[in-house]
Image 1 (spheres, rainbow, N blue to C red):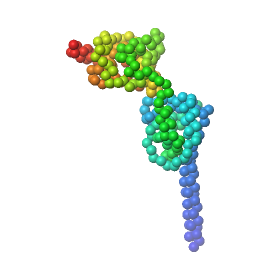
Image 2: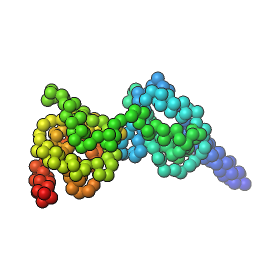
Image 3: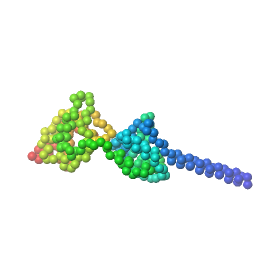
Image 4: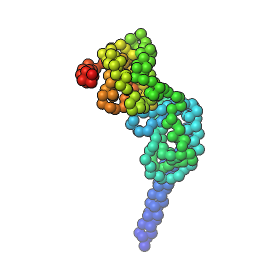
Length: 251
């Protein structure tokens, strides 16, 4: 009888310890460390965890995100696929990583919090500055623009154009081909292309013939011009020979 009582007491104690452990674990998951603005170095947003596209938040956006996170409401365990990733880099080099979908936001585990605003984080993904668009240029005026930005110091990189990469179909037209052909072998240095969404700033310089090649090839292949996140194209003789042969056949 005494043995049974002892076992009952041990079982009760064990149950209490396990329950307390679960409560403490649950409590740690629910904890929401606030963002202290004075400790923040920078915050940037990405669509993909390992993607290269990112936008750095400005001062007003940083303050807004910190305020919204600090005031979020706890919702509980919630499975979701992240639509955005928010990286908060502190001045001590610690990086806090948040997953966001609509108004839902998580930092650790699957415990979700709500900002109450499903459009807030989406608004951060829109660049706060207006940039030139390809439709505002022709292939020739584009090349002229990046040529004017060249720095005579060979040790310096040269950013010629910061522009969205949304080149429309048919941007390179028949009327541009002859002039682009004349520029095809030009190794005259000019500025690089930079997409505003890129977190990387290219180094070095481009060559006029590199851009002419890309534009001519897009016309030949009937594809949109695609300069990616950044581009510092150079003359490529092997491709140039193919383009010259193609152009000669068209005459």
